[in-house]
Length: 202
Image 1 (cartoon, one colour):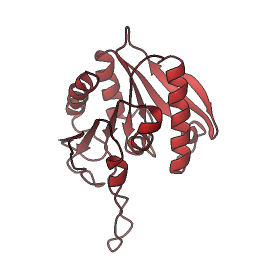
Image 2 (cartoon, rainbow, N blue to C red; image 1 turned 135 degrees about the vertical axis):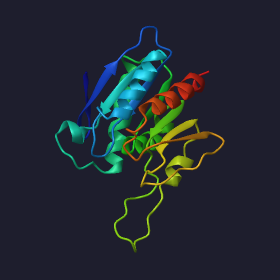
Image 3 (cartoon, rainbow, N blue to C red; image 1 turned 90 degrees about the vertical axis):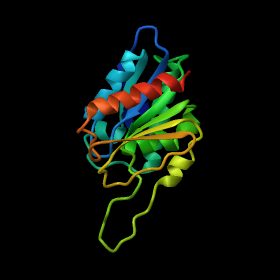
C-alpha cells in the first residue's frame, strides 16, 4: 500500500502487481463505498489474470474517515496526483487504463485526457443524478461520457436506478442482471472486463 500526498490530504493506492505486466489498471471507489466493493474486486482479479498490474485507490476523504464525498474538483485533482505518482513509480512505462465504480468512474472519465489513459473502465456509471422528488427533473452526466475520446467500457445493471448509458462507436455498454451494486452476476462483470481489457491495448 502506498500513501500518496495530495493537496487535499493523503490518498492510498493498494497495489497488486503482475509479473511481466502488459499494462496498468487504476480503479477508484464509489461515493459512499470503498475498494472492497465486489465488482471492483472481481475486475481486479480478472485484470491480474491478463497480466495487468492493478491499483485500487482510496480518495483522501475516505482515508480521513469521512463518508460524504469531496467535491468533484477535489476528487479529480487528487486522482491526477495519484495516477502521476504511480506512472512515475511502480507503473512506470506501462500503458494506463483508468476506471472505477460509480463516482470513481465519473472521475476516471473527467480526467482521462489529463492522465493519458488509453481506455476507461466504468462500473455502474451513474448517468442520472439522484431522484430528489417525483416532480424534480433529473440531470444527466452524459457530457462526461461524451467527452472521453478513448475506448470506454461500461458495465451496467439492468435495474440500475441511475439510468442506462447508450453505446457509441468508442463506448461499449454491457448490461447485466442486477442493480447499481453489480453484485448479482459477478461472473458477467469479470467476463465483460476480460474481453474488453484483452482488446483495448491490442
